[in-house]
Image (tube, rainbow, N blue to C red; front, side, top):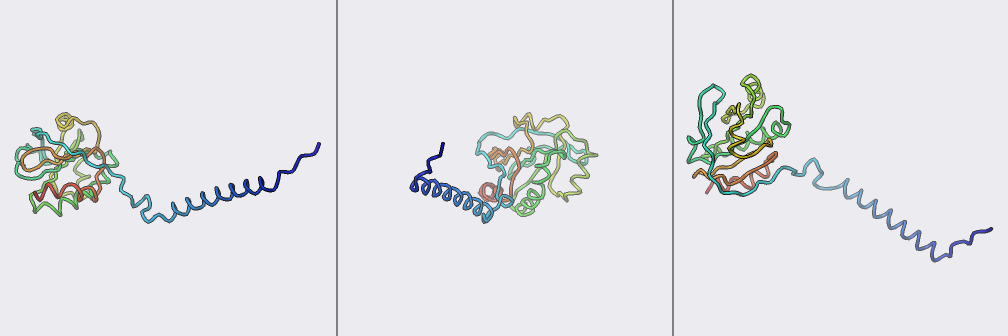
Length: 188
């Protein structure tokens, strides 16, 4: 039994389709490899949700063991950041938060990092290592998580000068998203 050779036009169309497919795959790889914004430069951080509710009354302790309350910051724009030393995204965002705090603190902006259920002996070396100059509070009983009704870390909340929570972040914050969403509230 002999095979009938494929007619020339059918072979030509098959080769054309295979060639076009290979060129398409090659073009996609070229574009991916030469992307002007490679994955390492893209911003995959969380985008905040806009909200409007009263900030909770929190009374916790600072790193010196002194009682501190959120009420004392009424009149300032406050970014509350719930975090822990064991949380990789929390550590990754700390330099960004520190830089943003330094840039806007003279405009009535305060950043308060509230550590979730870790002792001073764990938190203090972390604060020193990152050179954090904003207030750091200890929350041994998850009061802030309960009051803000969240379980994930990091979580951040921007409170306006009148005590209203205006933005919520669930996940890490980038400098780009801080600059995009928070200065309008600070400079109102």
